[in-house]
Length: 276
Image (cartoon, rainbow, N blue to C red; front, side):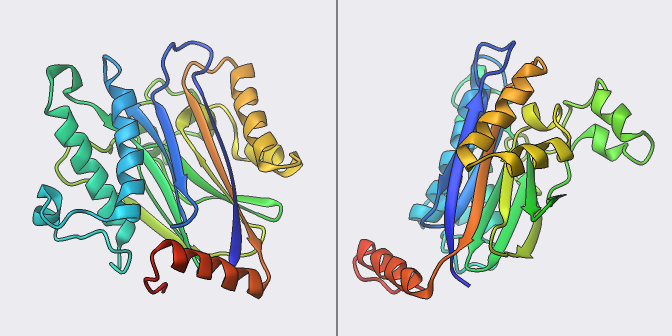
């Protein structure tokens, strides 16, 4: 079933910090959506998260050069025909951050979380590293599609949700892009339905707002832009001490003839190359 894709996003520095280490991006043509939360001193976190977003989008838009160091070591060329394109794209982003970190002592140890989704036909694929999240809103329900890679989440069987939200260790993550040569993302996939909304968000938002509050804010907003504003404003109203980012994606069923027109336009934009 063909879907039209509606997108809105907003990032905010928050109430305490002077710089924003969050980044987001999307490519509707390739169905890729991503948010990242950087870490590292001397603005290295900002650099890391931007590299992660640009690398992921560039992977799908242009592919990895066959003679690149990444291609040689990972055996990938960036084609979406690969059975795990999101995994390759994330490994590519990880490699790019590590390369950038080697260029100066002020960037040493920089890294980033990543949460991304790919919409391909009626399939939604999700991948993440760290504590940035992806939710699915379907009808009147909200479902997390990711589970934080954090010390608090690893202890969830021993402490309550309230204790977890208040834990001093809630900002310590156990996986990130950058520290290791090969990173281990988690993946999920679902069959899409018309009206589905994906919520991609950094922890500056999710550590303050409950799943139910996110659902209510999105469901009651007149459009996705208003919903983004509402979520960020709610976090700031609670005195957010972190950057906060949200990216909302809605899938809307479109008539078959519009789908054909879109594919033709895509075909022409790609100089007549076949569209699968």
